Length: 302
Image 1: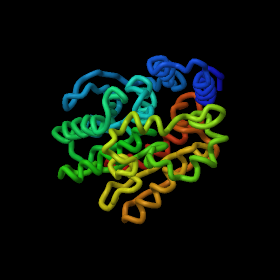
Image 2: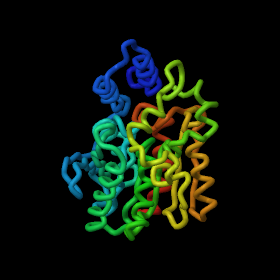
Image 3: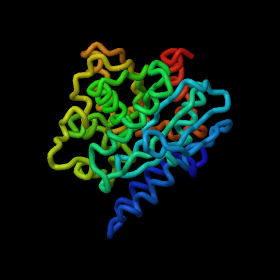
Image 4: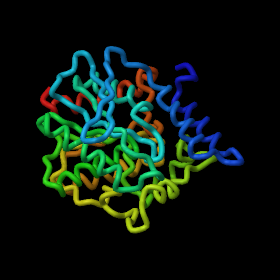
């Protein structure tokens, strides 16, 4: 794979920029993050439409051969401070194309400008609006990193508000424990090119930007690993074996099974955080997306 399209190279460059003195401003950091999607190839055969759903700006990714009544609700990653519907549109278009469904990406608010629960409120509004036009058994929810954790929080919120569950969950490298209690936070630091390495990312700082002082990082609504997961939809959890959030995924699968939820864990040995972003340039990423899609299709009746 050409180095310009390598996710590993992007993470190394991002990590190196984190060592600058003086440090990058928030806006400079977001400008770097805006190139995250450069590592993903255009899937082709997908139309994009910017609309509003539930009062929230969204981007629809519609493969030309997709079933019009099957929807993937896709929550982008970025630690709540970065990432966007634009950095992640190609990733989720690849997944939508493989599934044969339409994808919708909400442009939920960033921190620190807007703190929790704004992000959860916004994706709940989008989900509620989807339910007004689609059967819940025809909706699946996916998300990567922060968006992966948010996908679980969304289903917990749906339960609290009496909304029907989606047919399935497919969290990718999900951030499920804001207390950073998983052993891989430490043991995978040397192999994680984004969060670890020479410039370890300040995960505590991300948490402080997201949560007001009244909300604990152990609150099950922000750390769904600690929630009662009973009754949640079946879930397919995919994660890289070399990333610091590995145990957020491993422990989620264990917790889901403990609460009687159908759960499958897919660990790609040695791979990085959200390695699926290499779709179209990386055979490993393409194969991983194909596995998620193969699991999702029957859940959506496809």
